[in-house]
Amino acid sequence: MSYIKCTDLKMGYEDGVVFENLSFSVNKGDYLCIVGENGSGKSTLMKGLLGLVSPLSGAIEYGDGLEKKGIGYLPQQTDIQSDFPASVYEVVLSGTLSLRKLPFYSKSQKKTAFENMDRVGISDIKNKCFQELSGGQQQRVLLARALCATTKLIILDEPITGLDPLASQELYDLVKTLNKDGITVVMVSHDINSAVTHASHILHLSGESYFYGTTHKYVRSPYGEKFLITDCPCDDCRHQKEVSDNA
Image 1 (cartoon, rainbow, N blue to C red):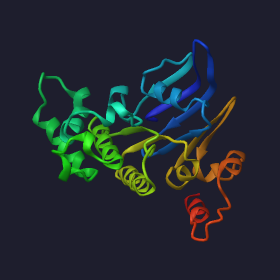
Image 2 (image 1 turned 90 degrees about the vertical axis):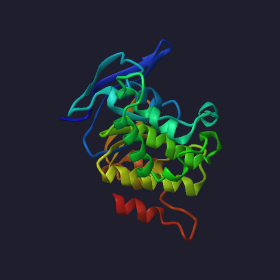
Image 3 (image 1 turned 90 degrees about the horizontal axis):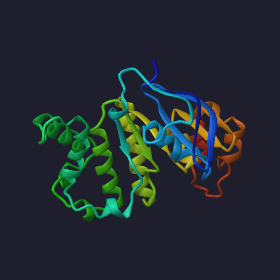
Image 4 (image 1 turned 135 degrees about the vertical axis):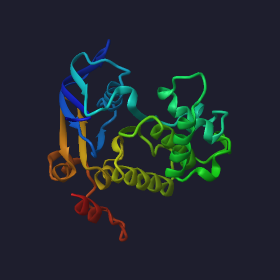
């Protein structure tokens, strides 16, 4: 059974429907990128998967041992998050709150925090203040925090926003490694070209229509042909090769 199965999903708000008739699934081991133009419903869908917004109709079902509270979530960076006055360790440890049953953190929860800091390469900065870190370091901290909430699936909302190219690539590489290690990934992204070099599946929302399928099928679909860069003027650009290799 799928971790997440969406059937004939219709979502929107009081001022109207954002999308409808949407069906797709997320299976164990998938790396799904949700892409599309601004206003196509990417954020609304993500909120639905997290249980923050209820569908107008249709169904979102969880299976294969996954529960809504067992989904790790890495939100978009905000000024409030950047100025959060806590240590790296404290931020990461807070990711275990959904598992917390006592008024204090257990040894097991602390162990989970240390393991995930090591997993994303931030153990050496565990005592530093979160607000003093670079954007790339902060995203690693928030990723470790998300991992503390799950052993199955993480949802990432535009994780490279505000990052420089090097930090963006390092984060992409880290997420890819986590996926290979068994974490199922759902990433909301505006970067379609990078999405096809990393994801196993693409969900492209586009007004009244959508594409859902493997990356291999996406790059050969009308959606891929329209939105992917296929001719880069840079002599050293490897984009086309990367798309072909991952297709």
